Image (cartoon, rainbow, N blue to C red; front, side):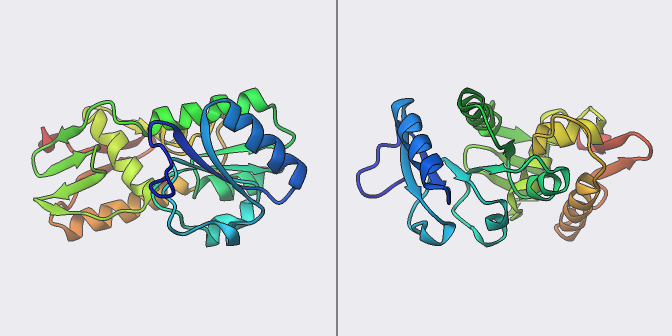
Length: 220
């Protein structure tokens, strides 16, 4: 968080948890584990000036009305498959209640590792991904994408020779640990394909029927 004297050397974490006992426990434990924590009862109380690294939500229904910068979002929710699938279309990870604190912290660190750039620039000619600035350039013009569409392009650009299965993309981009029936990959890939085509890069995402998705070989 970039105001009120927060130190960016620490991982800034905002917590919105309706249960007071859980909120107090997490705020105390996460702070003792080196996180810079701000805790609130509801997403309605979250300060709009904040720019956290991680947003931890105790209410899955809050995903639709919560917009805090470009941060990792982790949801604490029920052990309900439908709820989990809906939430993972909009967040980085989903942890079921009751949770083990040590696992939650491990998942936070895992999400942060996935979002950290391993290389700053991926140059594929007409398509350039600048991970440090979180920008995608199509023929030199910036292509603005929501977080999951951006992450999908980045993951495929990292291995442009590879055909990714739906299961691999669900794991690497959405954090699914077991396969669930969903058309999340198809819908996101379709939207990205249309946006690339509008930017003059038609056909850059190819659907290998029965297998998955790849970037077209002509990129290389």
